[in-house]
Amino acid sequence: MNWTAVISIYLFEMHRFFRTIAQSFLAPVISTSLYFVVFGAAIGSRIQEVDGVSYGAFIVPGLIMLTVITQSISNASFGIYFPKFIGTFSELLAAPISFLEIVLGYVGAAATKALIIGVIILITAFFFVDFSIEHPLAMLTFLVLTAISFSLFGFILGIWAGNFEQLQIVPLLIVTPLVFLGGSFYSISMLPPIWQSISMFNPVVYLISGFRWAFYGAADVPIVTSLLAIGVFTGICLYVIWWIFRSGWRIRD
Amino acid sequence: MRNIVEIKNLKKSYKGGFEALKGVNLDIREGEILALLGPNGAGKTTLISTVCGITTASSGSVSVGGHDIVHDYRAARAMIGLVPQEINLEPFERVINTVRFSRGLFGRSGDDGTMEKVLRQLSLWDKKDSQIRELSGGMKRRVLIAKALSHDPRVLFLDEPTAGVDVELRKDMWEIVAGLKAAGVTIILTTHYIEEAEAIADRVGVVAKGELMLVEDKDKLMARMGQKELEVQLSAPLSEIPGALQSDDLRLSKDGALIYTYDTRAERTGITSLLAAVAQEGLTLRDLVTRQSSLEEIFVNLVHEGGSKTEAEGVA
Image 1 (cartoon, rainbow over the protein chains, first blue to last red):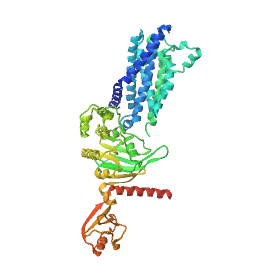
Image 2: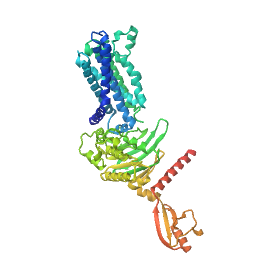
Image 3: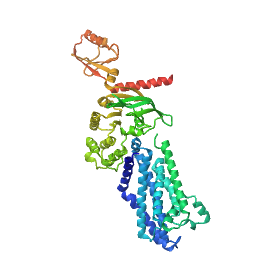
Image 4: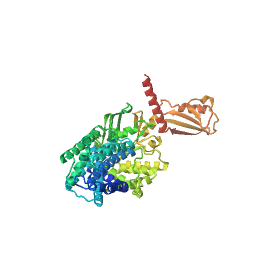
């Protein structure tokens, strides 16, 4: 195992993150703050409590999840697509490293960036609403697992993408709707029965539900189901990456 | 001298059926400078990319320092440095960071002074904290070399290092290459500048249409394949070639001297009879000068012959 290479990739990617600090974290912090102001303070004050917590507090886990998921995908997909785009990817192929090491470096960095942003948003939330975290360890576990699994997904996306449009299209057309309809802003139980059933096919529902349970002890689905869902998603991503590695798909001619 | 790179029957076909390499066999000797000459699209870059691990071979094998590039890729690649043809660099990154990154990829952590040595050698030390985008094209090319040298490779591949580079920088590159050779690094460079191969290579390989047409010591190649010119300078310059001397091999230079072209490989060069005929015409000799034809002419001949050979086979 070439750990030096893994660390080099990781640090190089993190360096990019800190170099573009405004774009990297100010943007998500500002947009999330706007959500708190609009949904938490302005509209939220007119909405009754959901699952026993104020609406402002109710949306905190969902908003963190929303940001961590989108950030993980965009960081990881961009991180691996950019070298392909400018041509430095061949340097990775010619280096004495395995594909696993490449994945560890890029996915590790993307997940770390998403986690940093997630934590910053959590801290920001304290300024806007009053809330507590019942199961901090479970909260952290969910956060880390989500960041890793969606960074793996982003990595696949970045390998697949042939241009910048393709890089944007999956997050825009698939991920954003899934995340918004995954219960970030509402409890699934608030939906009509038919939509509740449909929502069960949305993997993000399980993540947000589990994450919210870690905060307030109330969930739409059992916590074990949530863990299972994220486990299955991670498993699928790992399998696809393993297959890419084996076949050289979109990597080596 | 032992072989540091051994390429055996290497073939590469792309999905569309295009054969980029048609069974290349090549042994590269430790410490030599090998120039691979060939026109665009001949397969030079594919050959290098396959050895370096960027492209997967369809069949055949390659070993570097005795390590197979597929089964023992870590050991094989650790010995190799590659300077790609295109300037592929992150524009906003600083020189020192991108060099450190390359070094790290090869498992070298920290800095034992190699980076400073390499950057100084390439006159980049003053620019180490500059962003890549602030550098000139020539400087960027130096950064590519610095990245390739950051892990002390034993074998360095330079893919068209001087394409689009000004004369001064080209001379600098040649000096750098000579310095590396002195340090025991084996160098393989692709080029379509014959002048370059002629100036720095120990051996020359000619690649055309996915095949290695020949590999030979540069001097031997030139001697073996070369045509020579004999310039017969006369006391009184001629305005035209006397009728008795007329031949396809003879022409008149601007200043009225006779230029005779002959093949050094031929059984009879025809020099004796030419000089006899000159004497018979009553012309007085002032001086005789012979010139070796350049690699360029040899190269054009080879590629041309190779092309017609393939075409002939195609028809048959």
